[in-house]
Length: 281
Image 1 (cartoon, rainbow, N blue to C red):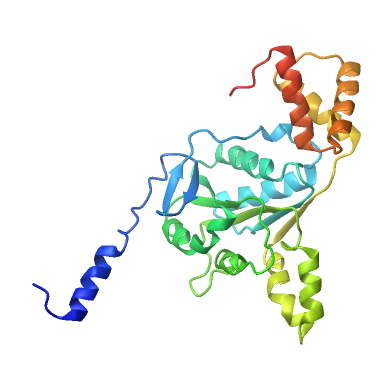
Image 2: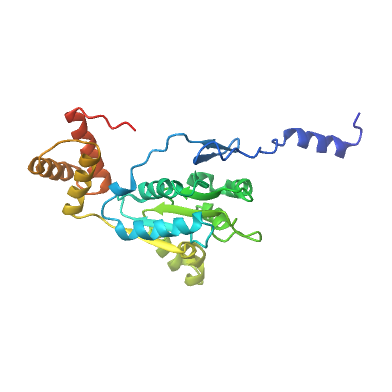
């Protein structure tokens, strides 16, 4: 029987504390998603991705990130990477496609998706990955920070690693529509209202500087847009005449008011459906 009040409090806290998270079986899959409440790594059997060869108009970014990933998978030095720029130009598709390509020759390479809102838990995630024999691409898609958003502080645990340092077997790949991960008006407002404008924003703006690789993605031109669609047609055996494809694809992007890899895929999905071609794996 526990009589001491402090002992009773300690016992109650012990009952309330969550059980230590069991080490996941990283041989279960090559891809995982990190969840919280409760903390767990969920294996993903079938990753939604396209073949690396179908990504058109991003050759320089593709080659740079592919080489960086091969180095990392081989146990060599590699950089964290920020893929930034135009929406729908294949940033997240490139990360997933490169993981699949490199995993084919380096079976220990894993990818773990981390949601932006779960960044405060990243320290616990890193503790699970630290020391594992596998190597992990920590993937954070659509990363950005708004006003009064302190989540960026948690990101430093991955980029800088604090006292322990970033685990040697973890690298971070993030995508964002913003190169500096925050709205321009937020930067200007802090510069204008601070006693020391430079110091007021340096901590947040310099977050992007902590990524060793900056890979820019820009809107595609019409030839690239049409080449993307033709590549999809060839890969999935969808027969269509060039003049028909050109006329329909241009009209499709005009109705959308934009031209991008995402719009190209959306047109292709519509075309494949009209042609009676399934797109299953």
